[in-house]
Image (cartoon, rainbow, N blue to C red; front, side):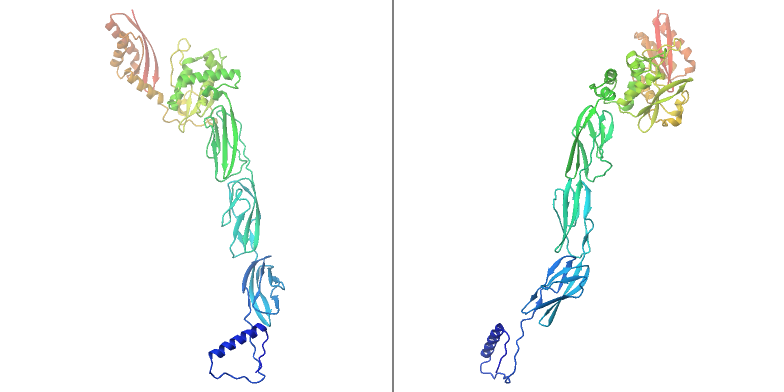
Length: 523
């Protein structure tokens, strides 16, 4: 028999196979072949390395044929989607799908090719420190991986979320298979400006109108400059402080030097940099505050303490030539403007919201104060609370009234006129009768409160017997019979001492009560 074997290695394979077959079937009848009959042994089955691939536009992928062959002829169904070289390298042209074919010894092999066109939602970004951005790739179903060229500037998560940590630039690369897409990121340096400040002023860190996520503020010396979580500044005292602004991994440190002012000097007793006259006023104002006000006092108590100091240490200027704070503090004499502006100075130093109010009283120009306390405005007329002797028209040293202390519009309007629309409404509140209550409490505590005529006479006589000849008693009885009350008191005093007595009196209304000051003489 004749065997037509095409290839050497196939011949060897056939011989070995026959030898094995004959050995296994020794003694059996073997099949016979006719003379001249051809036996063809097929080559091992050929195959493509891949039968389905996904690539991106511009991406390449090599296909190979496995097995034995003389030549491979490559072709593609749609060259608008992909191309293939004579060596089987497939390149994506545009999104779509097509088939790459390999012809081997008259046998065709196919590979389904899907071409994607991935794209980044951003290829250039200008970002702010502390902010974030979601980078994403569309046009692909394949896995996307991300990497930053400088993760200290731009950090990227596995999902493409960008975090901008400090000023600088970086490239973020999205990889899809063999394709790389790049987004260039520039993280700008924040514009941060710190204001110049004087003590007592408020301000803010200037961010040029920009907003930053995760921003924080801190002061190295809050007693000089404090800063809140929103960057609002408060200059508290002369000096300097470093303000630190932190945004993500970026840190800005700047210095604020707080200049001195009259208010700051009066409050803290630091006088550097002040003009001579301002320094003089500041020193005196600081001395007054040290004398009259303590940290433990409530605000209403502080207002009263300053009010009383001005009244006790100032006489109304009947020459109408003294108008200033300096006249009030150093000359001890001023018209209403001096009283009111001095009161305003102290309210400003104490940090209380207030303003001057201009109007008229008794047909003459007049100025007084408005003060804001616990959600309400109140009138405060220090001038009119400074008593004047009705006979001589002169100041009465040592006497203070509170008739015009913390009043609402309705009460103040009885003898004061002003343009209501130009000023906030003084609706009053809990402090309208504050002084009256406190004074009544004090009179009761001192044992100088008389409910009846008999109690009044008894208190007066007891004081005289203790050689206390000047006394003030709070009287709750009938004021219409007051004249008889003084005579009755004088008679009782004569009986008790056996001496002639003389009593002069001054009165003023204190709420519903009558405050009576007696001067008693014995002969």
